[in-house]
Image: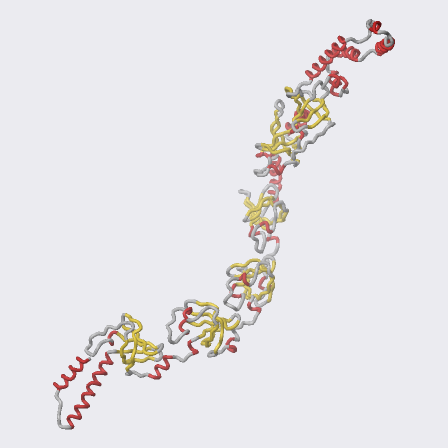
Amino acid sequence: MSFEETHNAPTTQTQESGAAEQPQNQAAEQPEVRAAEQPNPQATEQHSEAVTESSPRSADTASVPAPKSEKEPSMEDFATALETFEQEQAQTEAALNEEQIVTGTVLKVTAQYVVVDIGYKSEGVVQVAEFQDHEGNVTVQRGDEIAVMREPGHTEEGYIHLSHEKAQRLKAWDEIEKAFNDKASVKARVIDRIKGGLTVDILGARAFLPGSQVDLRPVRNLDGLKGHEIDVRIIKLNKKRGNIVASRKQLLEEDQSEKRTKTLEQLHEDAILTGTVKNLTDYGAFVDLGGIDGLLHITDMSWGRLTHPRDLVQVGDQIQVKVLKFDRDKQRVSLGFKQLTPDPWLDASERYPVGAHVSGRVISVTDYGAFIELEQGIEGLVHVSEMTWSKRMKHPSKLVNVGDQVEAVVLNVNPTERRISLGLKQLESNPWESLHEKFPVGAIVEGKVRNLTDFGAFIEIEDGIDGLVHVSNLSWTKRVKHPSEVLKKGDKVKAIVLAIEPDQRRLSLGVKQLQPDVWDTFFEQHRVGDVIHGKVLRLASFGAFVEIADGVEGLCHNSEAVDSHGAPIKLEAGMEHEFKIIKMNPAEKKVGLSIRAVGEEATRADVESYKAPAASSSSSGSGSTIGEFMSWKRASNENN
């Protein structure tokens, strides 16, 4: 700021007060300085006339100097006035110490400083951060008057360092000190979050609020408190350093202690109190009853089903609760919410009799069924077996979904265990009850192969009615190990109804029964003693199974697989022999075979054939001897 600007600037209130504090000798010099600063009107007028008269004169005359007026100020007078002014400014600036508050005017706001005119030779600057709110906005503008105090030193540009916060703190220090001594609470506005806590504004002074003193429990998000006004207590004060430390926790603890005392006076089991939901967990909610917390377990929130406490309450809600249990020594309180209403299961049997038709909303679907909410606190289970008459439903979700409104029939009610069994299929007629009339035993039906298992094939003869064709009822002739050897899924086949069990919902079918039984035909055409031709199919440790007709097998035991001399005959799969039927059991479909019996039969035939020509010879008078017969037998064996 130039000298002229400083000299012509209006005198501020601060300047006047500062001038009043100056010594008397300095005050006495002030009129002389001001007289020197202002030119004499008479001298100015005489000087103007002299200049006018000398205008028309010749150059020679003009070179003669005019006489000086005695009252005209000289350069020495101006130098003296400037020196006096600078001395005055230096004395005034020196009087501006770090303990004095002055009022200045904001000239401009830059990115770093707020420039302030305090009425002295140089302007002052304040850090712009001292005027920023919690959102970073500057709260002053050009022309605003603010209180400041000098800080040590100058900037590189020559500006005086000033502090607005220090001035505010000093102005509010008496009130802050009184609140500190009285341990009274004061209002504080949260300015910003800093390392270790928060910066707050108390009566215009900046103070530090440690993070541990913000609340009763640690606060995770301190940024959320920016801009909020809170009550605090000053717990530490250092006027020399200008440090202020505040605490909100102390006030909360005292308030909580006072509330706890009042709450304990009226706290007892079965008491009904009003509290505020303080915190939610997976297993329940903590409710502040007034200085003491109680646990409202999720099982005591509702007579119905809750997946999480937030389905019923939220943090900050005010609710009425009933004290279920109170341990005064440990100060533990168990609360209940559903106990404020009657238990709906007490008269569930009367309101939901067996056989009644009810409606409700599906609230859960599991692998074994669906839960239906009939009313608040009353749920019934529709088991998967009670959903449809068909056995093919793989999962309840194929029939119902959460949120569906459904009708059902009450099958059973157990208030003690708080269970209701429901059924959906009972709303329709049971197709198995009329199955005897539609498909009597022996009737031929046609259906589609729905499923194949190791023991047989399931055939759907109508919607919801499946019959089983056991693997043993697939073929008379073929030894079927798996139904896939004969049938495929999706095939349309015909079968005969073999048996019906409506109670068990079972239907037995047969495919091979559509063809005549080859065993019955065999037993009709053969008798014990018949000699038949057979082929060895497979061997066992006790004998060989022989195919003696299409689809008919017989067993030749090892004891029967010998020749006429008793020597064992080695049988192998694929070999063909003559076998004699020695046993038949139509009921068990078994046939016993023998090779030895065939040999014995051949021997008797040989004897008979030999005896026939011998008899004719004897009739002609010639006889045969035993030796001749043995020779014939030996020759016969050699030929074989």
